[in-house]
Length: 107
Image (cartoon, rainbow, N blue to C red; front, side, top):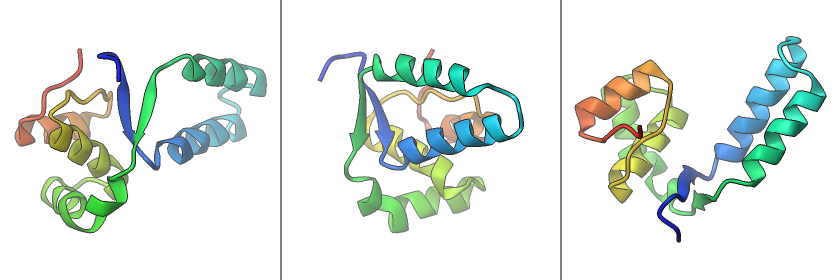
């Protein structure tokens, strides 16, 4: 594992696919633009966290309840907290929750 590895919950690929499909359906991006984005993603060192589901009905659910987050968003917070790594997000609710939980923001 390199220092610049990004760790993501196992649902990350589905979330990326959902965002792309919705953006294309709304006419916000073209298929060609989406494909270019996917090529960029393939060049990143992204590692899926195999333990995501083991924490889903315990720690992740507690974080979702405590911070009023979706379970999907809470899974990123749980992962960052468990691994002691900064959280990279532009979601303001998730940023606030991370700050309250003592998880550093990736800059």
